[in-house]
Image 1 (cartoon, rainbow, N blue to C red):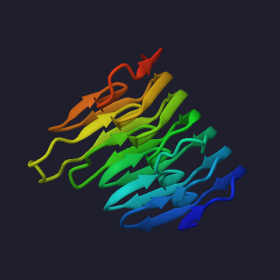
Image 2 (image 1 turned 90 degrees about the vertical axis):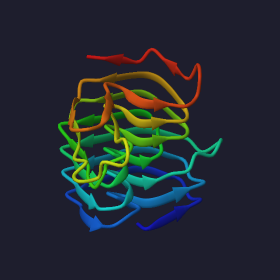
Image 3 (image 1 turned 180 degrees about the vertical axis):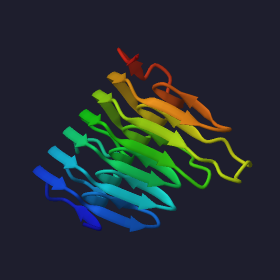
Image 4 (image 1 turned 60 degrees about the vertical axis):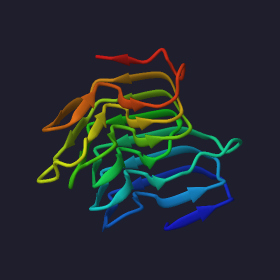
Amino acid sequence: IGYHRGQNLIDIRINGNNITGVSYLGGLLAYMENTSTQDITARNCTIYGTGSYIGGILGSKPYRNGYNSYRYYAYDMNVTGGSYVGGMFGQGGAYTAYIYNSTIKGINGGSYVGGISGYNLGEIGCSYNSGQVTVDVGTNTCCNAYVGGIIGRNYGSVDACYNEARITGKSLIQAGLFVKNTVENSVYKTYLN
């Protein structure tokens, strides 16, 4: 689905989606707003984009109060993008988001790459990542590439998250949970193994 607005999405399963493009790509949705979601599961999907907002399930979901996301699960995903790249969300978040045995990769500079979300503006809680997060900056040496096991850049709240992901890359700023946190007093009960 390219764009979705309004009607809530509940109990959706996607399996084996193979999507290639430039920007705003997701295994289920490229862009979503003003929608509540719950019980979304993705398996064996490959998402490849050279631009921004690339997610295993959702490319971009701007944060809006009153529209909640719960219970996202992803298994055996392969997600690659230029910037704002996440195993589940290029931009966005959810409560209860688990991703297993997946590879999330930033290319062409790879700024803001996260195991669950590349860029969080809302809430991420009760979430877990056990895959691999990596960045290939290539010949782009002008900018820092931020890569985190849970989030690349956090501008929202994070609660009760746990990362076991392997984080790799060259010439980048990296951290086990998230790299760039812009909001003070916004992180609670969050762990790294």
